[in-house]
Structure formats: structure tokens, C-alpha cells
Image 1 (cartoon, one colour):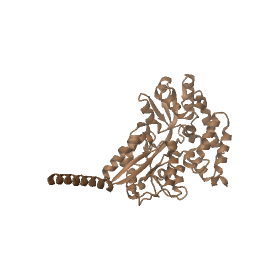
Image 2 (cartoon, rainbow, N blue to C red):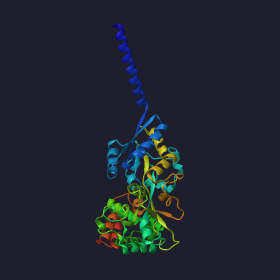
Image 3 (cartoon, one colour):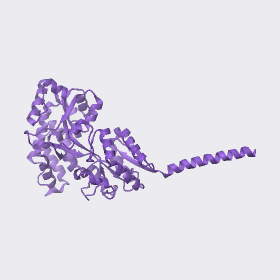
Image 4 (tube, rainbow, N blue to C red):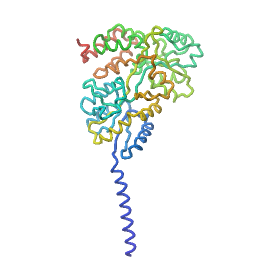
Length: 420
């Protein structure tokens, strides 16, 4: 009896030690949360987190993704309720500013994140506050706006990649004459219309000269150069599909993916999606050509986001380690390869042949994507005004002058350089 009791006691003690040991291991790990709007990238980020955890076995990171259209609201609710993640994937420019100003985000310096030194001023611009000039995030990816073209259709019609705007229009005319839809784009999705305009506009309004003057208040949206960019974009509607005003974003993509349109005006983020949806699609891209061969060739570019730290995080030391990892060449090259995007670390090289045509191309002059970069900090945002304006313009409810007037009036409510 005594022997049996002794065995039972030994088993209980052994089990207790085992459970205590397991609890101790778990308790010693710092539990970090990382939130993002990238629901489609869960597997990639979990693999990246695994790499970090191997290097930092005392830290565990949980990735939480939310629907794109709900993300800003979720962040606002979580910050106010004190439940925001430790590390936060932030949208760029005005979309992060609403969280920086109330003090929800931790300002980042080169002393805290030494890796910030390698990033350019332009790439840090997407996470730099216009109010206090402090940086609140490590750069994520940059995007540019291009023109995709169907190589099979080009071969069939004997077309060449255009070097001037008139050559591009000539290609569209040949497509139209052959009964082929020239542009897959439509206007039902306002944001996609803004992107499409952004692909052609800089070479009309003059790129950086116009943008810099606009930001400084030396000109405004009634500038003839801006109105000309609206006229130019409106002129492309004759090459869009029948019923383009009711064509949503996915329908536009499908027309191009299924060889039903010769071109698609869109962002560099489209390339990997096109390939995934139709591996047999024979396509490539070019940047909108200038009016004359040899003129400056502008390409609209912008930062897509950054990685920031919750200022109220109880795990700031671990959060800093994780954000430093996200800023490293190792992590940025991994995301560059896996997501098919241009990462901002200067030593990363895109594996995608499409992105290599855009990244660090000396023949191209990057220029800010006007409304996203400069006018999304207040309401009504420049993008909201532009998107509704483009829908009215291409739908025949307004002319370019009227659209420009509405944009100017809306932004002048809060933008002081326009109030002089």
C-alpha cells in the first residue's frame, strides 16, 4: 500500500514539474501582436515571422490581418480602446497621420532604429508627419503606375512599344480598327480611375515642377496644365470597353487577364496578380511615353505603407527588435521576392522582370502620385474629390474645368497655401 502511494506521489510530482517547466517556457516569451490589412499575404508574413523567431526565440509574434476597406476603422477603434497591436502595418501619408498626431504611434529615430539611415528621404516621406516632421514607420513597399500591354495582341497587329504619346494613341486606334478593346479600364471603381489618370497625367502637367508649385501654393488645380491632364485622360474613354462607367475593378482586371483588351492602366502591384490568375498571359509593361521622344519621362510613384510601433505597447523593446528586423535587407528582400513588390531598402533587387523595368531605372523620373501623396490629410480628401470628378467627367456630367474647380474649392477649405 505504501509502495503504491509512493509511486502515485512520484507521478504527481513529475507531472507537476513538467507542467511547471512548460508554463515557465511560455511565460518567459514576449508575446507580440502585429496587425496589417494584407489578408492575402498571411502565409508570407507567417514565414517571415518564423525567420525572426528563429533569431529571437524569446519573442513570439502573432499576425492579425483585417479587410482592406475596414482596416483604418479597426485601427482607430483599437487605439481608442487600448487594444491596438504592438507593431502596426501603417498606410502611408494622410492615412497614418490620424494616428500619429494623437500620440498613438511611437516616433522612430536612427538611435532607436539604426536601419533608418539607409532609407532615402523620399521613401521615409510616406511615414513622416507633416505636423512635427518625425518619422513613425519603417518603409514598406513603393508603388508606381504603369501601362500593361498584351504582347500577343501587339504581335498580331504589328505594334511596337510607343516612345511618344502620339504613337500610343496610334496603337489604340489600330486596336479599335481591329475590333479589339484598347483599354480595359472603366470608371465605376473611383480609386482605380484615379490610378489610371495617374499613369498618363504627369507627362501632361509636367511632373515635379507642377507638383512642387502646387504644394507651395504657387499654382493650384485651376492651372491649365492640370486641366489639360483631365482632357487627355477623358480622351481615352473612346478606347475603353462598352459600358465602362459601370465596369468595376475586378471586371477591368479580367478583361486584360483573359486577352480581351490590349492595355491596362494600373499599378506595379498588378503584375504578380496577373501572372497568378493566368500563367499563360503574354504581357509586359511600359511607362506612359512623353509628348516628344527625348522629353523627361515621368512615372507616378508613392509609398504604400510602413511598419510602426504602438506607443502604448507594454513590449516596446521586443517591438523595436521586430521592426528593426523588418527594416533589414534580409526581410525586405524576402518580401520583395515573395510579394513581387519594390521594397525600399536600397540593396534589394526585384526578382520580377516587370519590376526591374521600373526600379532604379535612370530613364524614368519618379514624381509624386499627386492626391495620395499631397492631399489625403484632411477632408474632403483630394482623392475623394478627384475620384468623383473623374466619374463625372468620363460619364459626361462635367467638363474638365468644372472638375478642376470642384477639386480646388474642396481642398482650399483646409489647405492654407491655397488660401493666400
